[in-house]
Image 1 (cartoon, rainbow, N blue to C red):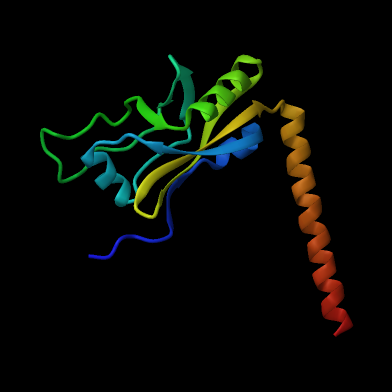
Image 2 (image 1 turned 45 degrees about the horizontal axis):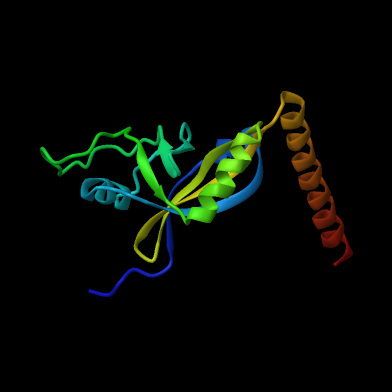
Length: 158
């Protein structure tokens, strides 16, 4: 059987881009059990409540919901367990310094398979205030309105 190629997205955290200002992103591997991988391959996961943290020089992902595998039996996994992240030591140190500086948190943005391996994209993020969220929405709507006007003007010109 040929190996998987490319990227297959399992879950995205769209709320994180609204709630946080994304500073920098990192790709990390996940330590998973067999039934977790099978459940992910079915496209079932929820990372909207998840967060990452650094403890004892290791990175962990918490509150990510991977439901139990439907054909699993007594070897099934707990759906909301703490999972270890696989990162290089220098990346863990950078993340640790960013979080300890204050005001920053580690948020999962995307859970996906890259060439058959489960990966998670985590971001160093700073929480937005309510007025910043409104400003982001306003800027996005203004950009859409400008694009609509340009399309309409280009159609009239033809």
